[in-house]
Amino acid sequence: MTTVPLPTDGTRWRCTLCGNLTRFDVTRSSKVVEYVHLDLAGEPSVEEREVVSETIESVRCRWCNAVDQIELVDRPGAAS
Image (tube, rainbow, N blue to C red; front, side):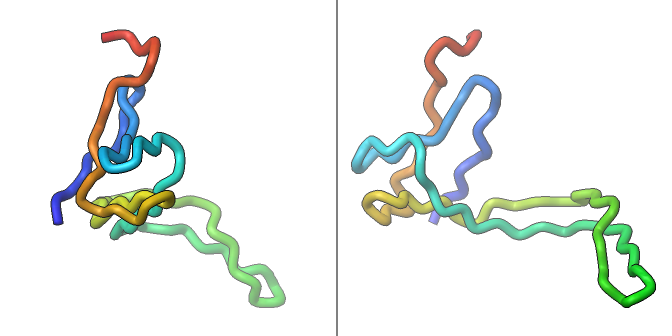
């Protein structure tokens, strides 16, 4: 399985099998540091979150379930 990079301001994902541009299931691993505040009743609330690292493990097309067929393409009207 190949890793697909995150889309940028000028790119987006596209399924090469069915042409889907809008619906994907993304599996990612993240390492985060969170500041958690507990209220007096003990209910936690995350007040700050810093992403230390993040890796996309897979991107699956919601329309045809393809996993190894996702590519990055230019967004229409994006500055090159």
